Length: 307
Image (cartoon, rainbow, N blue to C red; front, side):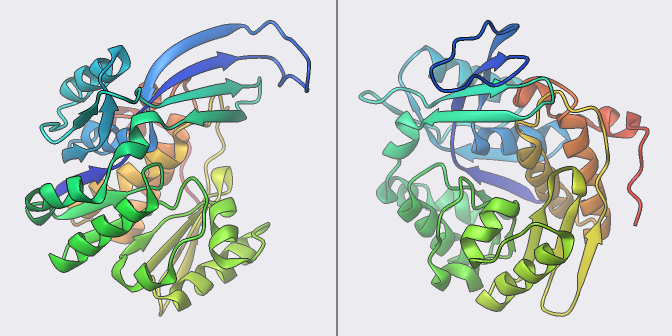
């Protein structure tokens, strides 16, 4: 089995469940409050490990209570964490997640220690990149650090997965080094300046990303499924309709599952179907990491993907 290295973020999610989103200046009584470990990087690492992946993580936490909880969670999930760093001057990242009755969410993020990760620290961990097979990255750490990770992973011939979230512009010079870029509709629009409102729009945006130099492009479309494209082909994979409770971490579940599938040398069609099912499982539960599925959860899913 190939080794997966996730380099990315940690967030402690403070989750509020409410019947409707408050308007400006409005105070509402919410129905439920929970605290979970999260962050795109940590979520993707947990998603891959929970399926049985060999996973390690590099990132930075605050030297505080939330930071200690994240380390305990990584241990519980069998994720190697010897290279996690602590910052004495910044707190662990925090996300405020508000979810309405339809499972839609609004999120505010204070990145905290995630933004204290620097290039020199990545260089100090080059051997971990060298000794891994698949490198998974997001954009909740400084963009220059992401570029440095890509450079080192490319130098050592690793499979590079980039989730360009939160949405921001990316230097097109790195495109040819990235094996898989996986944006959602909003992120694809930022990267291509092309509005993605339909499946055909997603196909066109995927082609624009391929033209930029990315080898494989996957645009996730929520419950509408996903587009997969390379220079020579493209394919639409249908979504699965489930009763959504919380859409947080659906994309992270998809990416972690994809990384696991690549680590197992599964065929891409099988990986895409598996990742879509994993995302469908994720939205059925409240919270980011508590909702990430194990194999038994994916197998229990009654709905199937139709072409």
